[in-house]
Structures are given as C-alpha cells and as structure tokens.
Length: 256
Image (tube, rainbow, N blue to C red; front, side):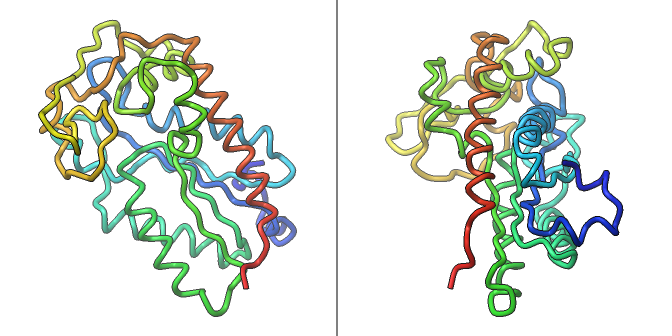
C-alpha cells in the first residue's frame, strides 16, 4: 500500500502500520550500468515487499537522491552532502511521527546512505526517548539484511560491491535494455590483513577514500559474471528476508 495514494483523512486509521521508506541514489555505476542503479534495485525490492505486506505496511516513494559525494568525480552523479542528507531523513521521520506513525523502516540500497541515515534517526529518537517509548526508527540495506542468505547462493561474489556481479545481475532483470556489454572493473589488492582497495575481501575497518581513488572506471567486482538468472535469485532472496523482517517488526512491543 502506497502512502501517497491515500487522502489525509485516511491516515489516522493507518498509523498502526509499519512505514517503509525506500532510499536510493543517483550516482555513477561504471561504464555499463545506469546512474539510477541503486534506486532501480531498491525500487524493485520495495515493490515486491509491498505486494507481500499489503495488510501491515505503508510505503513512501523512493528517495532517489542519496549521499554520494564520493562519486562526484564521475559526471552525472547527483548528491546531497552528509549534513543535507541527514536533515532530509530527520524531516521525513519527523513528518511521519507527527502523523502518528511509530514504526519507521528506511529500506536502503546505497552504502553511502547508511551512516548519515543512522545518525539522523538517532537524533530523532533522542528527542522522543521519554515521550514516545513505543517509537521504533530503523534502517537496513537489502544487501546487509539478507547477507547470510545471499552469500549462500553460490555466486562468484559473497557480497555486493559496486556495479558488480550482484548489481549487474539485478539490473539485467529490472532494466536489461540499460546494461552495456563493456564492463571494465577494478580488481586490485594490497598486502594487508585488514583492508582491500577493491573491496572483494571482507574489510575489517573503514578506510575513507573516494570512488575515483579506488577505481578508474567506477566499478568493482566481477560484472562479467552477471546473469538475469542470478539477478532474479538475488532480488527474490532479499525480498523474502525483508518481508520476514517487516512482518516481525510490525509485532515488536513497546520496550520498557
């Protein structure tokens, strides 16, 4: 059920529902994927989750712009600064809280959104910790919420990277006409037990660098190994896990 299809007079009767807010990005994804890749992926997963949670959830439209300043060296990227993005998320949350909603879930599809969204939601929660003990504010990314299940699919990659096998496979399902055949991607490592610049291995800490510093093409991983069959597996596996979460989230009690 879409929040935007309701009239304001219908909202008071819907406030027991979980509100799912999909958040994406408009940023470069290598030579072979469209700028809206993250929003396309998040939008398709949100569409499927919505169909399976019609009786317990409301969905806002996709927030298509994200915190993507680390991609601005590549033309076409449209980004909000960290401060602006935090303010947008805070205002979205405050708007929904003022309408009476008490369970908000920001469904994320862009890694750069994670930290500012967490920071924004914590600021909001701090304001209401005494007056609204029943308030839940959460953010989760499809590629983290479902990571154990996705990693078990037997694909070349065990996690999402950027414009990689996973993302390319999904776009081959959602927008196959937009996927280019030439898919150069950076795969380079350094002698480190803690961090790899191509993110193929599991990093044990955050090293803050721009995309241009890590990849000349704007892509990582193994996009040449993508296929629509893998894409459908990824989408449906992530959808199933997120549906399970939303159904459980709807039952969470007020924490004393």
